[in-house]
Length: 303
Image (cartoon, rainbow, N blue to C red; front, side):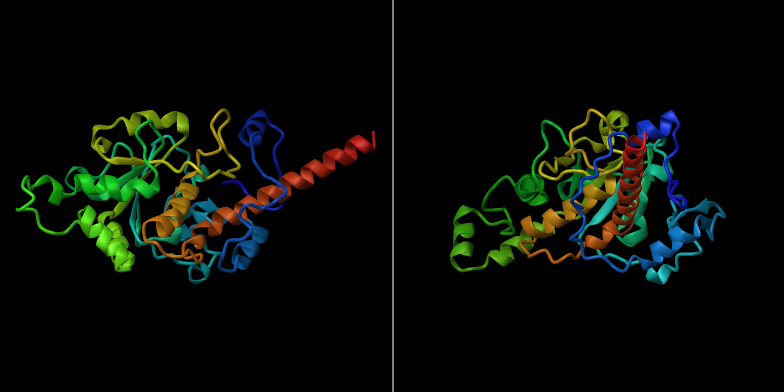
């Protein structure tokens, strides 16, 4: 990450290509988030890069290898988010640490997020009935359909061949109708939410994902696609649809949709602080682009 104050953009070819597809609209798509005070980030941005207290590296805001704030950012001023699910992030070995947003998740939800660098992948085979992989594809399902598909692969549906032997853990159609008639939909949502325990995300450029997604250890996991969410990532890859999200966007939007679609609860900003770093950096870059554009317009006027 190179957000040294004053924030400026290099004129070299690499910097231009890196930011040329930036999608920064006049209307801030992140403006309605319920965030902790970002004053600590504002002060850190003004003072510049600082040392990581663990590895000694020079960083801005946080160390993306140690997953801790730098010395100018007091850890007690960084929000901690409690997640309803465990998150595994599989990181491509060639993904640039400083450009990845996966570190945001580990920094802000340290108890619920684990990062692995490919080819290191946990063993999911015995638990695939309670794990989903967020990745677009022809067989991907929506968040709303997760419970239906996990029910099919639950042990209770696999181990018992006779309806008489099957334990009454999952409601049949008649039971489901009775549940709805009796106003016990909340109990039904609790059963659905109990099915899913962990969500897996891939942290990589989209062009580098093929090897990871084809790994046999991820085969058999239910794939979920976030089809209605749009990215505002400043490094959005040229030629890819705007529904291809950055890692932290994907985690955040998945949890928001899970909260409403599976938990059946009204969302009140419980996970918004996952965007604590992302929204601040987005605004920094948006302001810098706006200033650069105005300067360019002034230069043209003064010709």
